[in-house]
Image (cartoon, rainbow, N blue to C red):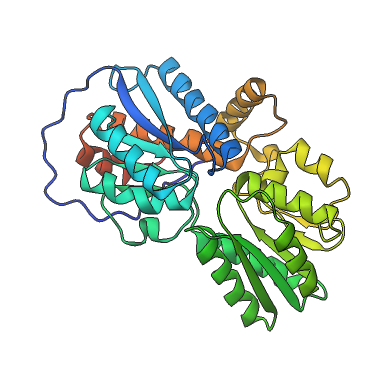
Length: 345
C-alpha cells in the first residue's frame, strides 16, 4: 500500500546546493519509552521494530553507500527526558535525523530542540495535534492527529444503543488531556453527557478511580490510557464489575495484540478498540515480512500499530536521505516534503 508522508512543515527557503559527504555509518536516532513511567511495552515494541528497519535497510544496501546505525534513546515518556535525549542524540551521538516516539509529551517537548538544531524528525506515534500544528520546518509525522483519532472514538460511541452518559478515564498528558476534551465536545454535540477522570502517567493502582466511575453509573466507558496503564485499569475495572464484560467499554489498542489482555478479561464481549492502519489480512508484502520477523523475535501473535509506525519512520528517513543524496538537514527536508514511501502501513 503506497503511503504518502503527512507533510506539515514550512516550505523551504534558501536551501544550499552543496551536499554533505556521508560519514559511515549514518546514524539515525530512535525515540522510545523503555523505562517507567513511560509505556515500556510500547517502547520495547518500537525498539524491536526500529532495529528490524535498520537490519532490512542495511541488507538492501544501506544509505548513500553506508550502513545505518539506529541509536535508541530512552525517553521514559517524560518531557524533560525527551529534551535531554534529543540533545544527546544530536550533540553527542551525531545523528542526522530522528524517528520513533510514542508519547505525545515527548513530541511536544522534544520537537523544538530538533528544529532549532536543523535535525529532521519523523514522529511515529505521537498524536498531539500541536506537534506539527505550528508547521516547524524540520518536524514531520506518520502518527494520526489526535483530533482525528478522538473523532473516530466519540462518533462510534455516540452511535452505540442506549448511550446517554459516558465516563472518560484519561491520562494527564499531552495526549490524554486534549483527547478527552475532544471526546467530551463530540459527545456533547450529540446530547450525551460525559464525566472525565484524569490520572497521572505511571499510575498502577486504579481502585479509587474505578469506584468513582462505578458511582457515575455510565452507559459507556472510554479509556484513554496508554500502555500498561490501559491494561491495568481494564483488569481492575473488570474485577470490580465495571469492565468490558459488564458495560460497553472503549479499551486501549494494546488489547488487539495482547494474549494477557484477554486472559484477564475473558468475557470482554463489550470491548471496543480502535486500530490504526489495516488488519493483517490486508497487509502488503513489506508488512507481511516485517510482521513475520517481528513475531519470530518477540513471540507475539501480531504487530502493534505503533511498531509498524516506528519501522516506517526509520524507512522514510532512510529513503529521504538516499533521495536527497546527502545527510544535510535541509536536503533531507526537501526530500521528505515530496516523498512517496512504500511502507508497512
